[in-house]
Length: 252
Image (cartoon, rainbow, N blue to C red; front, side, top):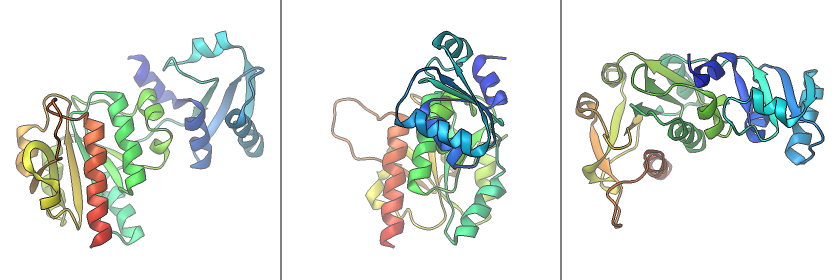
């Protein structure tokens, strides 16, 4: 088992923003380790939150934190919490129903870079998406690096892991969902109707959408670009398209 999977199972949270968001989201935290002698606004906030919740805070030296860290970037604080669990697809749809909103879901096809996945979960939270769906195989799962890259959004956005992404899309179509897949050969995003129950489908860096997943998309859309390189980073493309969907839903 690699270090990232160990972190996911142990629920280790590293980084000041990530630990603060874990407290604010109500996540169960068992213990906090803070760099002894270090003081700033965010570490002071973590101290207060731990004291208020009756959670033990240990003040340790940098060598101890460095030896505990699974990301190599703990920023002076590590928290031990319950592991990051996966939601069910039905949980995501129920979240939309409870808010009285048409479902808005990210479906990520073979994203292997944990920083990209974390950034997309962060975007999902900011764009008001109801959840994220990832495939079980050939893709990164919820790891410590993903949690850190999400800047705490992992505590708010349900993530479901499915065996077959294209089959899941087919099932969701029967429940009224439409899908827009990102591809440089698609129609201009402004020319596509992206309102209503919508799934935004993003492919992996370099390879893009897999054939079966692309075939399930109702819209294949592209972002207008004018530079010298041929594509955006997957998480950046996800953000641009997500907020075009937000714009269209807002103006509807």
